[in-house]
Length: 81
Image (cartoon, rainbow, N blue to C red):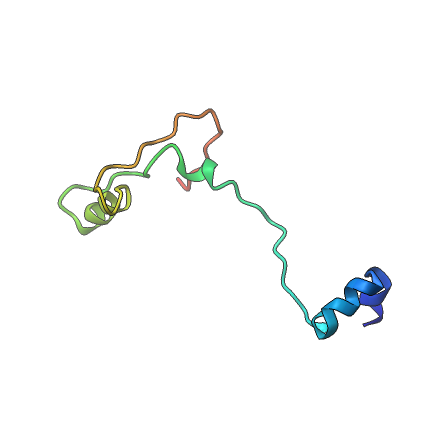
């Protein structure tokens, strides 16, 4: 509690009440998801396999069944291959 009070604004801490005593997990890492997904649907599995059916379903709009458009931006891509 001393640490919280030494860093916090007294009025704000009063508004927080008991919440000022709780611990929170904050993840400070950010991932540019656009750079991971915008240029590809990944490697196409062999046709006629369940993997291909799953891959094909994941690249389509669930309502219209149209294939999602791929982005042609110049963002550097980072894939897991």
